[in-house]
Length: 224
Image (tube, rainbow, N blue to C red; front, side):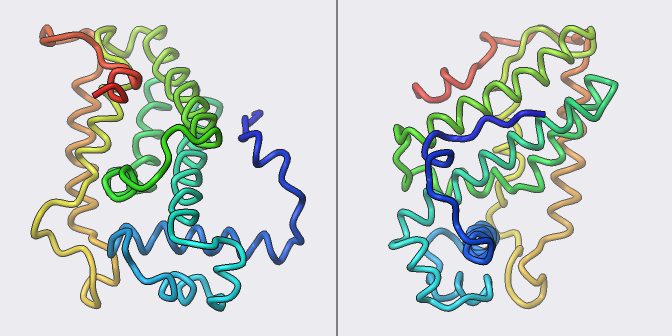
């Protein structure tokens, strides 16, 4: 499997291994804590969760906007990785789609999209490259399922991603943070997987009803 990385990532000078590990730990910690507590979480809490000092965090990410930018890139790259691996590993094309949807849930993209969408520069070259890679990976998954005759033909990538985003967004009043849950929400996780399975079953061919409107692409979503 060949992964397409951004031009900036490819041209960036190689870091020492320990510095690269610190950077990855900071991004991973930020991704987790922003899901739990929001994008305005104190950066010293991100450093604490990552097990690094504040100076190390600011050496890698000079401000919150830069950190959120890289969290967004990480989520997009990880999600594309999951889509590519699912297509490669599964013989059954619709099973590969199910595996990917489960992986997207684990990335908490529904919670993160609402937190990060107003902060990032959507036209940044790195984000455009990551977005294009993600588009291609998901379209390849859906294309394989469609060609196998298992996926109904009247949906597109945008339909899938809207459903994943909406169904994985925390519900108002649902306790998913704090000491009692340890930052996790197991009941909500079960709820999400249950309803995503219902959704995926509804995507299977032959279609049992005619959908109103037209299939939604990711370009359609960006123009709204």
